Amino acid sequence: MPTYTYTCRDCGSFDLMRTISGRAEPAHCPACDRESMRVISTPHLSRLDPSLDRAVTGAGLSSESPGVTRHIPSAARNTPPPARRPGHPSLPRP
Ligand SMILES: [Zn+2]
Image (cartoon, rainbow, N blue to C red; front, side, top):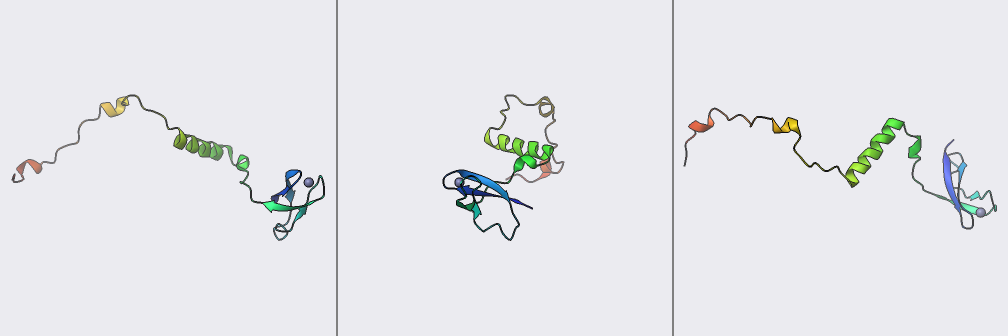
């Protein structure tokens, strides 16, 4: 059974396990018994697989504060220039 979040005007939000068909009906606050309406909340991402959670968190951090490269990586520095096409020197010049 899914968990839905409701908010009471006086006490704040609380979670209730309800059937899907009953999710839109007002719920009674467990503290003051006032009728409370459902609120749409974010999904519980902490329940994700830990490796997927790390990937999502890493992607967010990378987009907000990407790493800075201060020098050319050694593998890229030793790359030979692209090969010239053998037919290009024989093309007519303007
Ligand atoms: Zn309340």
